[in-house]
Structure formats: structure tokens, C-alpha cells
Image (cartoon, rainbow, N blue to C red; front, side, top):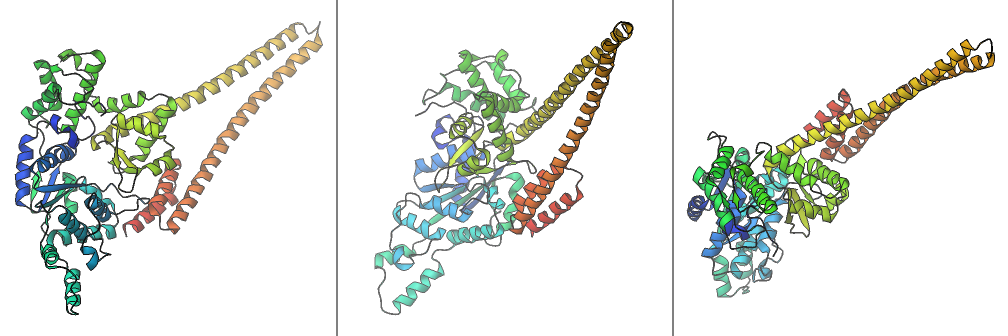
Length: 542
């Protein structure tokens, strides 16, 4: 097993890390008890407070330890045009893992591939369990899918949650029994009519909870039973800081270490902004992992006050440091393009998910570089149920700092380009001045020696005229260059508009909008492009 950090940093805790998950013991017990009483529960909080971690390293391990309810984690991922599976199919794929696909249900409806059917098969495969708990993490991703996909999901989930035996099975049994044909044995008939226990957990960001109203037509009680995951208390945060450092169980990159009391106070003061801000799990874990890295590098067994510095720029520095740690400028640029342009939707400041194939096709990022970015915790890889992996930014909290870093990079690139252009112009002017000075010197010498060397004077005058002509030629060339650049931009804008219209004719409005926004970035005054953007956005909404 690979060695791991004691603090997961930008990534949420995994189920295998339950032994270093501290500070949420009361929430785990309270939420578990709440879940025992209700069938459909919404777990909500602001981004960065640890919803994924409490599910992975708290609730799922407790369910597994008690053994009564089988946890089934589900993650949709954001919608993509190249993604083949919708949210309902993602849930079905998660349910049918490690479940025999052949049962007496096949004799009734062999083509029933509903969520209810696969949960029933799972019940038949695990009769010792009370039932199953579907845990939908990052549930807000559902609402990035088309309306038809959302409708299919809520219908399938409502049937699984509220239907003991679907009418299609009742109708089939009645029709075949009326013909005197015994389809199922008495025992199979009893098992068929025995409802499976099902509970559902929807983990969603607080600012996306209003979207759940879209599901109320099929899940009317969806907002009836909610559990808010609050920020860490000061004591819980202290436990989450100190206790993992003591742990001996586990294959860690660092040996056990400790914190000076003053260092703990400094960390808590930073996390709370001197007791005026609530403590977010993500911030705590990223800070502590940076201190663990320092302990490894400098062989520190006691973290002291002097070891803690530069906290204000923690997240932006974290991103920049991970990028700088890459081997070559080419790798660093490829990583920045993937993260800043591929994994973030800048207009809405949210994360995106990309499949391996997309990354290879659109960004030409080698698998080795992807592995490095995963190891750095800038991005995380999740197995795709259709094979391979999907990739996304580790956490929402990194979106803002990365966009700020992107802005600085683009400004610096523009500044360097302008500086290089200015240096080139200055070199040309220096050369031109040298030629003019030389020509003037020749003219003076020719004048002084006019009586002796008329020919030399004529040559000097000619050189002066040539120098002036070259200066005019240089100015003319610069004007031609600027005009050509403007024409190039104009042609590029026209090509982008044509591409957008091609995509729009195929109803690919998102791709069309990408082309138009790129055109608007080149020519921000182009009213035609702006009108087309507004039109396509309206069509997309319709």
C-alpha cells in the first residue's frame, strides 16, 4: 500500500482513512440516528465543511461496522456531451456492482433494467441485511443534466423508494396466473412481495438546496428531513489538528509528530480570523498537510510557532507550488491549461469533470502528468463505471485562488509580450540611430574634405539618404505588420462566428457559445457576436 499523508489536504477523506478522521464524532452519531428514523434525508452545508468526508470516513464505516444497512455510494459527475450515462444509469450501475444479474426476476421481466429491479436483485443477494442506503454525494451535479435526464432520475428513484412491487409485475403475474401457468414457486412469490428496505441520503451544497424543488413532483417529502453540517467547533478543530499527528496505525509519509500549544493557538486564530470566522474542514486539512510536508522536509518532530508563516496566501501558494514542482516548463503549461481552462467553468466559478479521453483529445496531457497532478492533490481521479477514470479539481475552495492565479499568469504573459515587443523596437531604433550617426559622420567628413575628396562627400550624402529611406521603410513595415495583425484578428473572429453557426445548426449551443465567447475575447466591441451569444443562450434555456 502506498504511503499517505496524515491530512488529506484538498481531497476529502476516504473510507480507508476513518482512523485519522477526527472532530466529527458527534455529527456522525447524530446523523446516523437521524438516518435510522427517516427514508429520505438531505445532508447540506456550505462547500468546504466536509460533507464528502463525513459520508466516506464517518457514516459509511459506521454502517459497515453495524452491518444492518448496506451503503451504496453514488456520484454522478457533471454533465458532458461526450458522457454516455445519465444520472439514473449511474445510480443503477452503482447498485448492480457485485450483484448476481440472474434471478427469478428474469423469468418475469428479463428486460427490466430499472433501479427498482436492481435493488430487488441486491435484496435477493443479501437477504441478511435490512436494506440499502443510497448515498448521493455532490448531488447538485444532477442539475447540470438536461431536463429529460433529471425527470428519468426522479421517476426511477421515486419508484424504488416508495413502491413495494411495481404494477408491471403485478399485471404480468395476474395475466399469466389467469392462464393457469405457475411462473414462480410459493417461496419466490413471497420473496417478490417482500419489500426491500431503502433509504436515501442526498448531500448537497447549501446554495444549491433550492434546486431540490425540481424533484418535489415525484419526491414530495424531499425537503422534509434535512441535516445541516455546521463548521467545526474550536475543540473539534483542535482534535482534527492534533490527533492524526499522533497516530501510529497506518502507512504514513511522516513519523508521528506533535504541536506546540502556541502553534495550535496560531493555527486556530488564522482559521477563525481571530474568532470571527467559522472553521472549514477543507481549510484546516490543507493547512495541516502543508505543515506535515514541512515536518517531512525539515525532519521536525514538534511544530512550533516559528514554523507557521505565510498563511494568508495558503491556497494560491498551494496551487502555484504544486505547479512549480512539475519537471518542465512544458508540463507546467499543460497542467495550467488543463486545470484553469478545462476543469473550471469560469463564468459560473464551478468545477467541471473531464474523462480521460476528453483530456487526451482536448489538452494532450500525458497519463504521467495526470498521475503527478493527482499525487499533488490538485485534482482527483474517480473510477468511471464505464471504465477508466474521470478527473476534477479537488475542491470548490480552490476555484477562486486558481482563477486569480490564472489572471496573474495572463497579465504576466501580456506584460512579457509587450516588453519583448518594446525591446525589439528599441533594438531596431538603436541600430537605426547608429546607422544615422555613421551617415552623419561621413557627411561631416566629406564636407571638411570637400576640396580634397568630393567623391567621399557624395558617398556620405548617399549613405545618409539610404539611412533615412530605411527608417521610413521600417516605419512602413511596422504599419503593415499592425494592419496584418488586425486583419488576422478579423478573419479569426469571422471563422469563430462561422464555427459557432455550424455548431448551432447541429443544436450544439454550448460549443457554439464557447466559439462566440472566444471571438468576443478578440473583438470585445463586436455587437454581432454579442447578439448571437444572447440568442444562443436563449435557445439553450428553451
